[in-house]
Length: 231
Image (cartoon, rainbow, N blue to C red; front, side, top):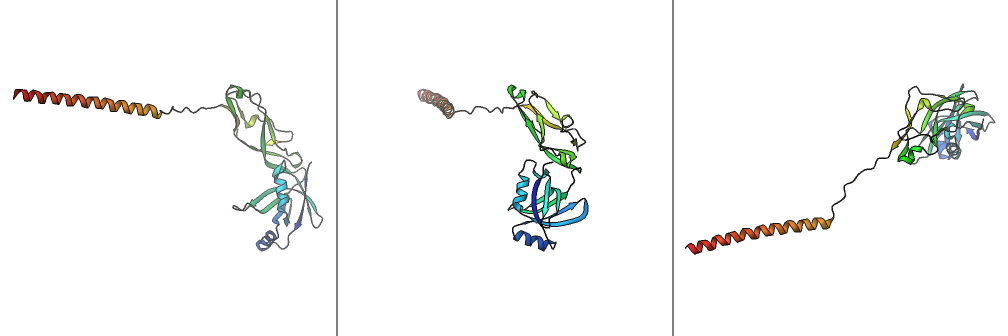
C-alpha cells in the first residue's frame, strides 16, 4: 500500500483561541479521530496538506502521520475548510484507518481513447466526473478508467455497466448515465441583410413614391387647365 509521509505536531491546549494562535503561527489546526475514542488536536504546515491534495490520489491518499511525540498512525483527509475569500486553509480533519478498513470514497473518472462516433460528427459528453465506491484502504484506486473507443453515435454508458477495479464495489443504488456520445448541434443563423441592399431598396421605394407624386400632380394640372378653357 502506497502511503504519503506527513509530519505534524500535537496542539495543546484545544479550543478556538488555540486554533487562532496556530493560524497566526502559519500552521493549520486540525484533528485526528476514528477507530479509538481519542481525538487528537494537531497543527500542520499548509504546504503538507496542499502536497497531499495535489497528489495523484488527492484526498483519497492514505497518509502515514508522524507526530512530534513519535507516534505513527495511518489516516486519510476526511475534510478540510478554506477561507471563502483568501482561500487559505483554515482547518483539516484526519480520520484514522487500518489497511483493512472499508471506506466510502468518491473516485475520479478517467475516459481513455477516442470514440468511433467522433468520426461521424459526434462528441463525447461525460455526465459524471466522479463515482462513489467502497473499498479497503489498501485498495483505493487512483481513478476509475473507462475505454471509450468502441462507443458510437447515440451510445451511452450507465453506472451499473462500469467495470470497477478488483476489490472495489459501487456505493450507489440507482442506475444513472455516466457518459453519452451525442450529435454535435450546429446553430443556424440567418444571413444578415447587407447595408447596400437596404440602401438600394430605400432608393427604389423613394423613386416609386416620387413617380406617384409626379403623376398625381400632372392630373391636377390637367383638370385646372380644362377648367380654365371652359370658363
